[in-house]
Image 1 (cartoon, helix red, strand yellow):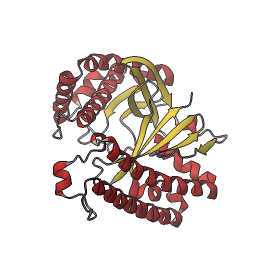
Image 2: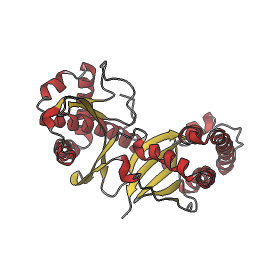
Image 3: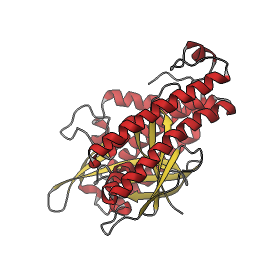
Length: 341
C-alpha cells in the first residue's frame, strides 16, 4: 500500500476509494459464488497476499468510515442477487468465479479489458461460457468512470481507425499541452515575482503546493485555464474527426464508454449515504444499438475542463485532469458516463 498523508484530504479520499473498490469487488464476487454454491472453492483459490490485502483494506475503512464498512456487505449481496435476477442465467451452472487482477496464475488469466470479475459456466448444451463484469459503486446521480487515459496518446489510441490523421492530431495536441503548460508556469511565477525556467523548481515545491485542489483561488484560476486550453484544442479535433467520418467516430466512442470489450457487462450500484438507490446493468447495445446511435458533441462551456458528448440517452464526459501534481505537463482524460434525465 502506498504511503499516504492522512492530513491530505485528497490523498485520503483516493486511498479510501481504492480500498472501497477492491473490497466491493471481492464481496460481490463472494456473493456470486455463494449463489453458485462454490463459495469455498472461491475463497480457497484466493492468493494469500490478496487475503492479507483484504485485511488491510478492511482496517483502513474501519478506521476512517465505519458506516461504509457496515454497508458494503449488504450492497454487494443485493448486487449479486440483481445480476442473477436480470441475466436469468442459472447460478448453479457456474463452476468458477474470479476477481481479476488478484490471480497469481490461471488457465484463464491474461488481459481482460475493463473486466473486474469473470465467471465461467457450462450452458444447458454443455458448452463453456464466460461472463465478464465491470463493477462500480457510485453515488446516486453521479457520472460512472469508464476509462482513464493519458492525454498524450488519447487521440492516437482511441481514434486510431483514422490512420495517419489521428497521429497528426495527436502531435498537434501534444504541442498544445507543452505550450499551455509553459504559459501557465510563467503566469504562476509572475504571481510570486519569480522567473519561470520551464520547470517548477525546488523553491516552488518547498514553499507552494503542487496539488491543484490546495491552491488559493487566484492561482487556481490560472491552472484551470490551462486545462481549458487543452480541452478546447481536443474539442476542435474531435469535431473535425466527427465531420470526416461519423461511423469511425461512433466506433471510437464505444471504448471510451467502457465497451472496448463488447462482451463486457457493466454492473453499477448507485447509493446515497451507502443506502442503495438502484442497480443498473448495461451492455454495449444499450448505448450502441444495431439500428444506429444518435450522438452529438456539445459546445464547450467557457473555462470548462470537460468535453461532453451525447451518446444515445447517455452523456459521455471527457475531463482533463493532472496525473497527480499540476507542476508537470502530465495529464489524463477521465472518461465517464451518466444517463440523461
